[in-house]
Image (cartoon, rainbow, N blue to C red; front, side, top):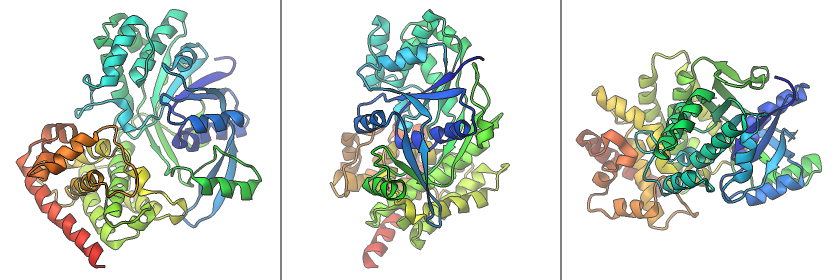
Amino acid sequence: MGGESRMLHLGLGAFHRAHQASYLQDLRDRGDCRWRLAGGNLRADQLAVEDALRAQRGSYTLETVSPEGQRRYRCIDAIRELLPWQEGARHLVETGARAETRIVSLSVTEAGYGLDGAGRLDERDPGVAADLEAHARGGSANTIYGVLGAMLALRRSEGGGPLTLLSCDNLRHNGKRLRGALLRFLELAGDMSLRDWTQDNTSCPNAMVDRITPRPDAGVRARVLAATGREDKAAVMAEEFRQWVVEDDFRNGRPAWEQAGVQMVDSVAPFEEAKIRLLNASHSAIAWAGLLADTAFIHEGARDTRIQALVRGYTDEAIACLRPSPLDLGGYRDTVLARFGNAALADTNQRVVADSAAKLREFVLPTLRERLAARASVEGSVVLPALFLSFLRRWVAGELPFAHADQAMDEATARGICADADPVRALVGERALFGELAGSEDLLAALRSAEKRVAAFARGIVAA
């Protein structure tokens, strides 16, 4: 593989710049400059960041903070090409089609994959429907499937060769799901020849990513200026800890990530399950409970003994589902909760509750499903959907201290649940949240009990 190779990333948010870009920066700092990053956004909600990065020629400062509050500053210049957002994502399509682009990676959030409750392509999604029509007539695209479909069609026609599609989102079996949804999209579009080419010429490794990355604010810029003398409008901050576990299934080469600490493995499954069920689910639980306690930051909830008890009740049941495991699950859980208590991160409940419906389905549902199937207690696990229902009630009542939107649940659906004569039954009946468990009488009975516990928790907060 001669010359410099390109990795194109879709989604230039803070997490990508604090996580994947930092690993490639490690290689560049070691003198390995065989790979360069290109990046762009599918949505027009990062234009200020794009402008700042363009003005700084793609470089920015990464601030990391340890649990003890020690801060370090590092210049990241691994992003060598910035592709400005445009309707239809033509720049992304053309760049992804070029032969020197060997990997296309994505961080588009869980909801950005447009999956239904069973983890398959949601064929009723309006964006997917519009892109199916656009694909048939060669028009512009806006969902990841429309963009990837157009990219792969152009790549095939120009002889660009095999390609790896690498998901970097907190989605269980993210590579497998991306591949299944993309192939289904091409089937629905009637483009079976491209579907077959994609099946033969692409791979979609599963991957697990981990680094708490709060939304950057003015405080980050002020600290960067004070520490480095650099006025950086694209600065990001993250915890010191990071982890990236990737299945080593690449069709056309990859960076030597293992030299930068990436764990290249045959199967990511045990790492993925532990992270999604113990870290991601607990993160959401702390945020939902924290809002009920009228706190603003994750570390406040993580340090609250009452919230800790709720979270540990859930994680005890999740750990029982995960065993046997090659990981020290109890130690991993304790490390995670200690990381959440890092006050220097100032990570907000607002950031963590984004797209809560998708997080409930992806992070919490599997443990509920497995415990109920085994006729085991769900007393701890069912507290999380009870907290989610409390969160929905505050959202529709306008009691949240911030504007909220959820790509996986519109406000009308949330209002319908909360306005129902029996909101608990209405919630349990939502197939988009609970899949085959929707309408389960066992789940309903457990959730009614958990709702009382959450109400008692809320009363205790007010009394305190």
